[in-house]
Image (cartoon, rainbow, N blue to C red; front, side, top):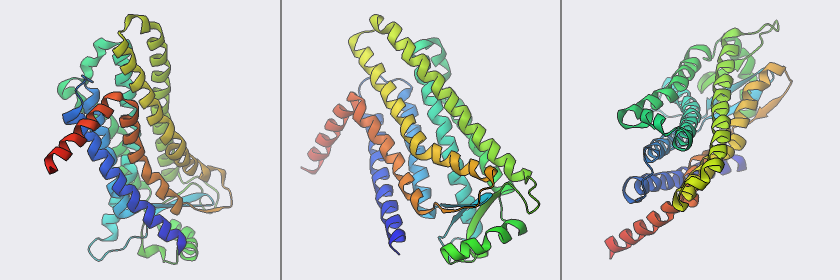
Amino acid sequence: MLLARIYYFVSVFSFLLTTVSNVLLIILTRWYVRKNLGTYKHLIIIFSSIGLIYDFAEYIFQPMVHSFNSGFIYFSLIHSQYISNRVTEIALAATASLFLSSSAFLAVMFIHRFFSVAKQEQLYYFQGKRVTLWIFYALFFGLPCFAGWIQLCSIDEFSNNYFSSEVQNVYGKPLDTISAFSVIVFDENEKIRWKNAIFIIFVILSMLIQNFIIFFCCFKIHTKIHDKNRNYSKSLRELHSQIFRTLVLQFAIPTLFLFTPAFVIMILPFFGLQLSLPLGYSMCFFFLYPAIDSFIVMYIIKEYKKALHDFIFDVQDFFN
């Protein structure tokens, strides 16, 4: 099947590209970037590590989504004699939760940049071991999401009857043979299935909270940079501008290609539309985001261009 081949090719390509780009970014940040970026260096390393783990999980388990009428099913067609369906389900839940945690940690990076520009005394909360507090902030959204998938979205008798024929017709596999979670907003009597509705509301609110924080920080950073530019040295003005543009792109690209589609998938069941949208194969293009994110940092921040030049020189020197 052509779509399956495209899906496999893109997933392999994105996995390799993400691995190389994120490992390279971590190496450059840790050992080659000479300019003092402060705690921002640690945040870059953490965010890149999240991207690596996320892309590795996506490559191994290849999560897919199928939207159908008043619900959607989140599943994997991967089958192995060495990995049980339950283990795959846990991995699927962890992957989706990591997606939510990464959006929360992106908001943390904007908070750090806002403090750097407008409230430098507050950078105290990013120093030393206090950085772990922000990791817990990201987990504050990710862990309930993980628990929600496991406890609220497991396949029950109603969801099995609701999706079984659709999965069989579209993917050629019985639903009870694959690893899957389901979300259905309305039951057969058109009453709200609160356990699924609460889960969707939690995910949507979590995403909106991060977006509000990012928009607020963007506005404040832009205002403060404009007001204080005359007091900054040329090099500091350039650094603030480069980091700000990097963060804006790091927010704009996933918002357009990841968070907005995820929001649409989550909100569609509430409209009770009669539709069947196999979104699985289109998701393979989402896998490219972690690689794109790393290239954004290395392309915009000039210090990384110098660091990359030094790294290439060291590699050439090593082999010669």
